[in-house]
Length: 134
Image (cartoon, rainbow, N blue to C red):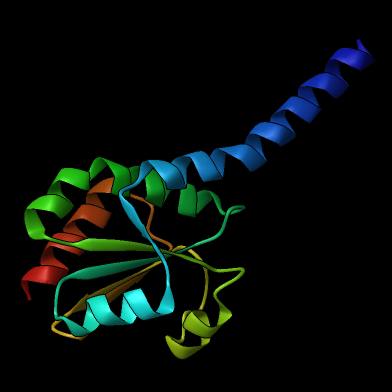
């Protein structure tokens, strides 16, 4: 019985660390690159920066929601960037991002809205649509 519990715990730990990458990969993300991001924002196009961490449950929920909104992004010509909280410290510092699970909307070359820690799919969709309509 103890061996079974240990195996179950190991499997649960493996899935917990492997799952975030799977969720992030399923969303329609552009790879974050400082220059590519800056050029895209400066063009004035609508951009979302999703500040994410592999270990963050809220970030996983956000990634699932963002993946479900892929058609909306295409219709609105939105570019979605995944910014890693743990490795992109310059972005985090320069944009004064207080925590992972932050969504930042840019339009016409500047930030227009920000959401921190929201995981409700309807609220995220409303935030994005209204943020870009302002």
